[in-house]
Image 1 (cartoon, rainbow, N blue to C red):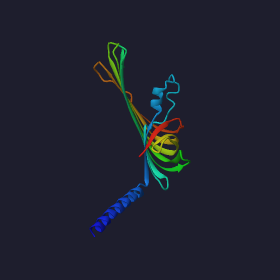
Image 2 (image 1 turned 180 degrees about the vertical axis):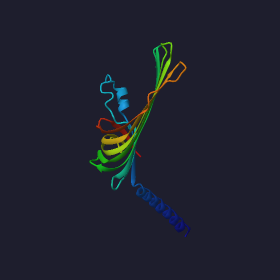
Image 3 (image 1 turned 90 degrees about the vertical axis):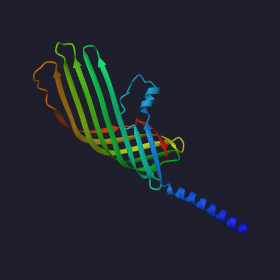
Image 4 (image 1 turned 90 degrees about the horizontal axis):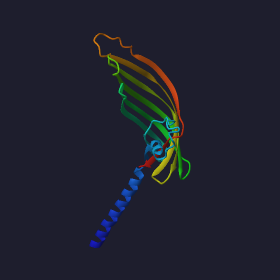
Length: 229
């Protein structure tokens, strides 16, 4: 009788373990992908004498997407950020520049299985861009030092279609490229403040604000290393 009870307990435990595994498998209905842009690394490893070094207009360094295993429908996110600060002093003019640019996109997509090693996708994105550039230039050559403070801010938003193609190196490691066409609209503001090392008022030029709108086609020349989670 005791052996029967022990066997029943063990059998129940095995059944529960198997059921838990089956439930875990059933619960995973979504696939997540995280990717990083490789173009900057490729330019560092393979020096092409800077030829066409700036032809890549795709600003999104990091990408993330989540897709349904059953339908292929999902959401995707892209983030790009560029901060650069540098100074230059030739003995006459001292210049300090700070560049602070951010790009974000969020969209919906549909994933398609083309073959065992290939997948593709298409969808629509909403995009937001915020570019902030600040330059301070000081002229020390004359008897009256002059400092010019220039600020340029560009904020734009819009959206458009996108499509991508990926090659599955392994089950979890992929290489991909993408193409998109985004139309954005927004405002660009420029302000210039001039300060002279002499007393008295000085009339600075007025701030300028321009409405901007543009369409940008990002051709599939950007490559991403993607990991499936």
